[in-house]
Length: 239
Image (cartoon, rainbow, N blue to C red; front, side, top):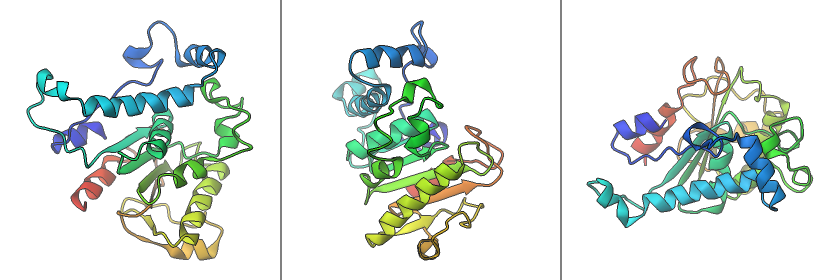
């Protein structure tokens, strides 16, 4: 996603999530999550704040001193991520209104799974699941765009994910907001059980919800039909 956006002239910052890549610092994300929990914080909050700090950095006047030749258009900012990065994008987008659009891939999964002990230790928040769900977080982004990308063969595209997507679509449509499927969706809407909600979907890209499911895609795989950057090409071209 970042590569193709940069090729099209956009300033892109692609930071590591704590505990991954060059930000591992001798300890993985699970150890970092444990340390944060012991301090009364949690990993999800930390990576959301890190994402917003990254946006602060992009708006810093010091970028020109680092070689950036042109000023950044602060009126147009998007945030995107895959898997855990998708959670960071979703949460930071819900908090920070500087992000015009939020794109989350492969992880729109109900908090009854994401925050349980059966998922990643870093996201274990047992008290969260009973109070809100992932579609509640996504609703905080509306009327800005939430783009949800999933793979039809992704093990996370299960009944919990399908239910969360349907609940988001239901709440948006009940509030008279557009719900759309993108042109890269080739899975269809048969998993939506509410016929009224299903019938409200239309083709589009500048909507509070844009759904794109690639039927042959797996988790975190660019390829196999899961060409995530196509959405951003289309979105930016139609902005």
